[in-house]
Each structure stands twice: as structure tokens, then as C-alpha cells.
Image 1 (cartoon, rainbow, N blue to C red):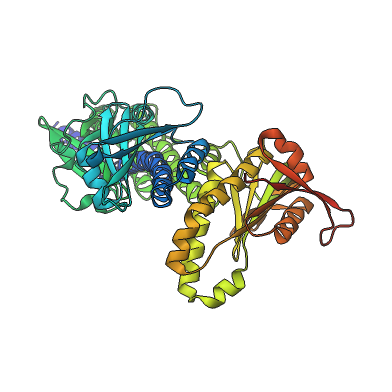
Image 2: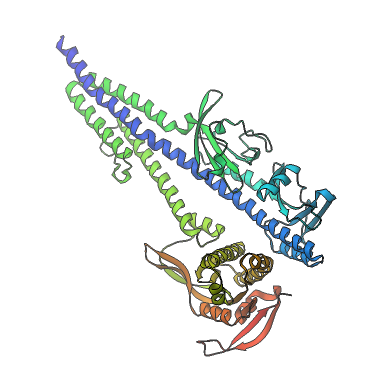
Length: 574
């Protein structure tokens, strides 16, 4: 009788020990995977918020600086030309409808609006925002939960007075974005907040309980961060406690604005999978012990086999060999439930990692030549990136620097490259603003296309409007470039519409999204015969663009490589 208890005890120990080892190994190897997945999700969310806030505010800053430049020109010329330019700039902007011109020392405050603008006037600047604008080139102040004021300085005039341009920044959409992103956390409890340079709260999700405009410097998620962290673009992991409850979070600085985006939530919710796994592991160990006591040697073998299978499964998951995860052959008991839960968790981790990696790859590839809106649509799976092409109705634009060869020969190579980078940055922003795609840069020439990859019924009108903007921006920037580089920059632009083959050309390792066809060739030929700062438009483009533009017929032209003459129009700049 003494041997039986000893035998049962030994069998129980032999049966339960592997379960305990397997559970401990399972928790250990999967802890890093769960923590890594949670941190990756948090970094992805704060990066998305950071990109959105930078895009909205930088668009407003770009438009405000254009207004400030025009006002400075008006002050130097003492005429109405600058004021007309301000109204023209506002007419073409999508991020602002109005701007306020202020000279605090002279108690001057004037509002410029689009002709069709409605609603409240732009907010006035604050002394703190003006001081920040003088120091760093842009200042920001919170007006209320849904509105901010962005301030840029105007160069001092002859009387020494300082002027400023203030434009509104709509923060309501950012608050809505934070609410939506907070809902991505399956177990809830997440709080998101955007802070400005003074660590004031710019936006927050509605469930955080934090007030816009409040002081966020004392938030526990920032407690371990040094004073210079906002200058570093990398995300920073923050582990802290709120009211004795452990939290996990991430802070993503936005160096362009000296802002920061922070997210945090309770550790218990973030790592709930580990707690559930531990609980089921204990139940499995208890079941194994009872089974060993009742079934003796035979039961020991039946328990040990699935336990070892679970141990192997844990190692496979820990090594992230997702394709090798298999849960077949396990018994229909607690061990089987644990194996099923492990398999489900492995598939969820695999899906999360694949989704994050795919989104990061697609955004990285596409952001180099597509606008922000098109990148978002493609990442969401609405457009394919497979090799191949299809016919589409498009409008193609070529913009080339006139007399670039003499310019390049007269200036050092470093200055030529710097000038081209500044020019292409400006032209690319205009193409994206009109929902176009930058196809490629060919030396000193930019090629852009509208109507692909997303069909657009008004692709011709968008291209002509973009060309009009290019010459307007060039008028504002030409004087600065002439003073900086000692050269006068002028563009020749050609536009044509029609059917072309659009798609990805190349290989799986290296591909290029491009447009091919006679439509492209005609646009290039028009650019070659265009005069400096002239936009030549083919007849088909003029027909599709409609009456929204002043297109003056210049007659039929014989283009290189074409048998028939092409009707050509010139865009009247007024």
C-alpha cells in the first residue's frame, strides 16, 4: 500500500512537472511577443497622429508664409500688387479660407478672406505666439478645443514695425481622429493626447478627461522624459504609474513643431493575454495532476504527450515561426483548450505583424511619388500594386527649367542641386495639393499625371490649375532665388490629355509607377516649344478643362514626330 501512494505521487510529479515547465516557458517566450506587439501598435498609432497633425499644421504654415511673403512685397512696392497677390493666394488654398494681418505696435489688424468665405474671422495672435514666431519662424496658440491659431512673421518694413500673419488651424478633426484611434485597442482604456512646445494640451480623445489648453507637463507619461526629447523624432517608450496602477505608453515627438503625441493605457489591459494564459496554464496543471492520480501510468503518458506538444508549440511561437504553428492531435480537455488558445493567439500576432509591416512598406514605397490621399487609399487595399498596366484617361504635365544648361554651367554644382531641390519640393507640393501624382524627375524637368491610379473626371482641370499655381508660386519665389543664387528661374510647361497605359513597370525587386503612350509624348513636345513662364495646352485638354480657365488659341502646331498638326492653346495669366 505504501508503494501505490509513492507511485501515484511520482507519476503525478512526472506529469505535472512538464506542465509547469511548459507554462513557465510559454509565459516567458510569449511575454516579449505580446509586449512587442503592444508597443508596435502604440508606435503605429502615435506616428499616424503625428503625421496627421504635422500635415494639417504644415499646410496652414505654408499658406500663411505665402501670404506673409506677398504682404512683405506689398509693403516694399507700396502698391496694390501685393494685396492682389494675397487674394489670389487665398483663392487657390485648400487649408485656409482667410488670414489676419497684424502689426501690434501700430494697432493694425486686417482680415483677408476668399470671395466665397463664410463663418468666423481668423483669430488674433497672442504675445506668446508672436514671440515664438519671431524666435523659430512659426508660433501656435490654442483658441478653444476645436481651433488653433498659427502665426508667422512678416519681415520688418522700413519703419521697423513687426507684422504677423495669423491663420486658423482646425483641430476638431484631430480630436475626432484621436477618438477613432483610441477605439483600435481591443481591450480599451487607451488615452491619447497631443501637446505643443510648452506641453499644453492641443487635442485629446474624449475619454481621456483632459481639457484642451490645459497643462500637460505633469502627465505621468512624460515624467521620465528629458527636456530635449521633443527634438528627437524617435518614439520613446514610457512605463509609469497612475494612482498606483501600472501603465504602458509611447511618446512620439514632432520636431517640426516641437510638439509631441502620447498614448498610454493600463498594463493589465495591454497584457491581458498573458494573464489569461497564466490562468489557463494553472488549470491545465491541476487537470494534469488529477488525471495522473486517476489514471496512473497510462494517464501519465497521455498527459505528458500533449504537454510536450504545448512546450514545442510555445517555442515555435516564441521563435515567430507562424507557419509551423499546429494544434492538431491535442486532447479535448484543458490542455486542448490551452493549445487552441495558443494557436488563436499565434494567428492574431501573425496577422498584426503582417498588417503593420505591410502598411509600413506600402507607405514607405508610395509616399515617395504619391500624394497623402492616394497612399491612404492604396494602403487600405482599394488599389493594387502588382506589375502591369491598364488603359486610362489621364492628363500629363511636363514642367521644365528654361535655359538650365547655361544656369548649371554658371553656378557651382552644390548650388544647382540646392536650387533644384527647392524648386522640385515646391512643384511636388502643388501637384499633391491638386490630387496629382509625381511620375518622375528627369534632370531639371518634372513629369506629373492626373487621373491615375485613381480615376478623376476633372483630371484636365486639376492639371491646368496646378500649372497656374506653379507660375504663381514661381513669381513669389523667383526674387528670393535670384538674390540667393544669382539666377532667374523660369518654367516652360506643356499639358496634354488622352488615353495612356498606366501601371507598374519593372520587376518585383524594383518597379516604377509610370504613364506610357502618345499622350505623354505630345505633352513633352508642348513643353519643348513653350516660351519661358508659358503654359501650352493641347486642344483635348482645353476641351476637358472647360470655361474655368482663360485659354487663348495659338493655332495649329506641327510637333516633332507627329504627322498631323495639333491645336494648341496658351494659358492666359492675366
